[in-house]
Image (cartoon, rainbow, N blue to C red; front, side, top):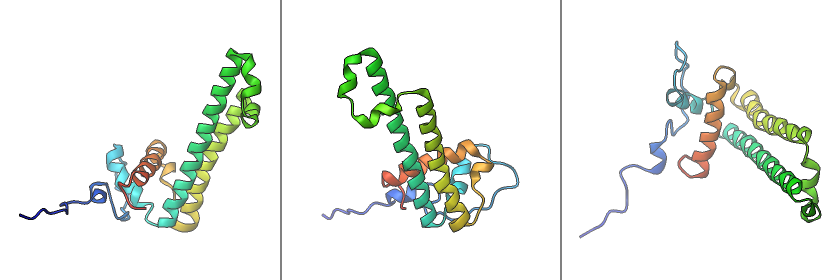
Length: 154
């Protein structure tokens, strides 16, 4: 009796457009994210461009998490003023709405700057963000998730 350890399909073959093959834009606009996502992946056929997208998305995520930590610290201090001296100094300057707004802008710039430079210099195509802004943003996060969870190769 022999046991086969190979499966009929690998984990990466279950994802949309696993080889990042470029797909021509259809004559009519996409009407769903599911239909759009394989096209989005084809617009990122260069590995370096995908890496730049991951750097930008990760930087945006890190900046967002830092902003949330600052907001929690500010709320804690407002509720209990005796906590101020216990908080790390790097969290203290980020308590005002102006600073949180700056962090939000920084997160957006980080996310898009890396991606758009990748499209302009490496992929040499126009980012899908200009035609499908919400679905492109969703595609960035889905791509990051699929790569970090090993569902998709980089």
